[in-house]
Each structure stands twice: as structure tokens, then as C-alpha cells.
Amino acid sequence: MRAYLCCSLVILTFVWLPGGAALAASVAQTPVPNLLINGDLETPYYAQGAPTRTGPQGWGLWVGAGLPDALPHKDSPQVYSGTVSWHLRQDKGVFTAAGYQQVNGIAPGTALELSAYAWAFACDDTVTRCAIATFPYTQSNTSAGVAVRVGIDPTGGLDPLSEAVQWSAEEAPYDRWQALRVTATAQSDTVTVYLFMRQETGLALNGVYWDAVTLTQVPGAQQTDVPAFTVNPTATTAPSPTPTSTPLAPVPELLNASAGSLCAVIFEDTNANAVRDQGEPSLAGQRLLITGVERADTFTTDEDDDPLCLELPPGSYEVAVIPAEGVGLTGTQAMLVTVWPGRRAEVAFGAAAGYVPPPIPAITEMPAASDEGDPGLVAPPLDATAVVPQQDVPLQDQVYDYSGLIVLALAVAVGGGSALVLLALRRPA
Image 1 (spheres, rainbow, N blue to C red):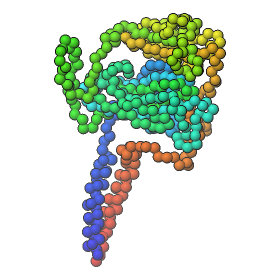
Image 2 (cartoon, rainbow, N blue to C red; image 1 turned 60 degrees about the vertical axis):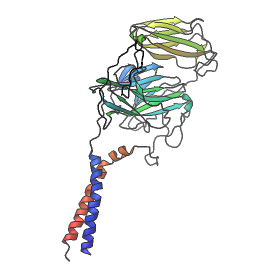
Image 3 (cartoon, rainbow, N blue to C red; image 1 turned 90 degrees about the vertical axis):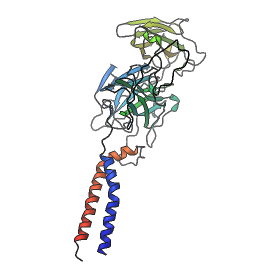
Image 4 (cartoon, rainbow, N blue to C red; image 1 turned 180 degrees about the horizontal axis):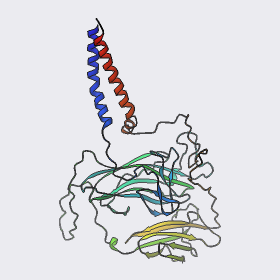
């Protein structure tokens, strides 16, 4: 009996240990380093042209349309990792924006993967704020047409509209965290990553949250030589294909221009939906205030201004509407627009005679007192005793989260098994 017990324990130990050792080695394996600064988008946050338009340390903010706020958000479930997420929003207005970061010291030819998590919220009810009783405690109105994506510019440029940017598929992750991923091969020693967001219709409440951003070298990928990009306009035959996963498009000649154009129109929004539908004419007699770093200009529209276009130096400009008496704006009153060399930026404002916009409660994300909860955009607050459905967390993240317990369990099991073997061997016959 003793011999049978000893053999069984020895066989079990040798059968189990290889699998346990492999699991322990996997847990102890060094994670792939994140090449980004502050990939979790944690504090501190710094102003990006306005007190309520901020970006986390290491990140910049590009605004293509609208005038969004950008602030740290600390309420679950809209925090995926760490203590805060990056929240961009513009209530009752559409916006297009992108967070970005340049990464230096990349060897050309390195295969890279960008990963980020995004959450979208849109609601047209300022009373209930689209709250529901079950997780995730909100149910968005999908008519906002929110779309998010992530991208890598393998050349290290700072134009998210460049054709060089490699993009992930667009997603609309209403009321949930959605992983976005894209791969690209570095074409220089600097690459730029983008967190891009846009929407089609401005509802009463709009927002996008970002968190857990990583840029890593693709495991097992070999560095490849990057061919120089050349243009041969006199060639009569197509060149041989070049083996590269991220071919670059020719740079348009217009990018060499020293100025860009900003075009704005104020239209008669007959159905008050803040979107210019077919047949809605422009409105004359409305004032536009265009403010830049070194200039501020005021214009009054007339019937021929559809749209009113200006040639401006590259930079960021705030375009604001001062409606005539008796005219109300159906959408946002101001937008922040970036003018790029050789490109045309367009904005449109809806207005209607006699229109009075409904009041919208102010929403802030100021730190709450220690004995108060921060309502944010979530109602009701999470109950620690409630049963919350498990979010879709990757297996690798689950193993990493419980790595300490796994290693401890392995140690206890190995120690206990060894003790049983020793006791069995020393037990008198």
C-alpha cells in the first residue's frame, strides 16, 4: 500500500509539475513594454487652449470641428484602468477631435501595434440623462452617429488627416468598452499615434471616453528595411511591388502652401435638427467672429456667402456666431477649427427665426467632497453589493491580474505535495 501511494504521488508530481512550471513561467514572463508616455491617461492634465479643454501628461489634443471640453473622468464604469479616463464631450453639438502623441527612438522597419479602449455616450434627454437601472446604467441614443478609431502615422507627422496614417476599423461603442487595434511598420525613427473621434448629429449630451492605450512592438516580428519613397512621373510601366505593409501615398502639392482656407456658413435650420439638410438656404445678416492667436475678425454674412471663405495662416481658430435679433441658434454657438496648409476647413451653424433653445443643465466633473459621490454621466452610482455582469476582459489580462494568487497556489501545491511524499517515505512499515 505504501509503495502504491508513493508511486501515485511521484507520478502525480511529475505529471503536474511540467504544466505548473509552464504556467508559472508564462505568468512570470516580462510583459511587452509600452512605448507611450502615460498610456493609462492618468493625471496631471494640462490646458489645451481653454481651462475645460485639457489633455493628460504626454498627450496633445487636435480639434477638427466643434468646441469640445476634455477632462479627466473618475467614475466607473467609464474608467477601464487606473483612476481616470480621458473624457471629451460637447453637449448639443457635433465635434471632431483626436488625442495624439509622438514617439521617438523607433527603429525604422519596426512592426508596431496600437491598442486603446473607447466608450461612447449620447443622449437627447436632459431630465433622465438616459439612465437605466441595470449595468451599465445608461442607454445611449445611437442616432448621434458616433465613430471612433485609432491610427498610427509611421512617418511621425502631426496631421491626422494625412493619407499616411494607418487606421483601425471604425467602431461605435455605445455604453461599453471597445478595444481598437491597428498595426503599422515604422517608416522613420518617430511615429505618431492618434485617438480619433467624430459624430454626425449633436444631441443634448455627447461624450467619448478613452483609456488603456498601448503602443508595443509586435512580438516575434522581424525588423525590415524601409525602402525610400520616390516618384517617377515619366515612367511608362508600373514599378515592381515593394514588400511593405504600410505603403505611403504621395504628399499632395497643396501641402506646400503657406496658408489654408476656413469656410463658414450659417444656414436656415427649418427643422431645428442642427444639421444642414438639402434645400436649407444660408442666412444673411448674421455676424461671425473668427479669433486666432494673433488676430480677431468680424464678418457679416450676405445672400452670396454660401459659404464665406477666408484665407488664413495655419493654426487654430475659434469661430463664433452672433445671431441677429430674433434669431436663435439650433446647435452650437462656437467651434474650434484647425487650418492646415493647403487644406480647406468647413463649419456650419444652424439658426432659425424665433427659435429658443431649451435650457441644458450644466454638467461638471469637479472633484466631489469626500462624503459625496460624483454623479458624472452615470445614474445611479455603482453599488458595491450589487451583482454586476462581468465585463469582457482578455484572458491575458485576467491571468496578469491574478498572477500573485496563481504563483502562491503553485507554491503551496508544490510544497504540500513534497511534504506528502516525504511523510509517505518516512512512515514506518
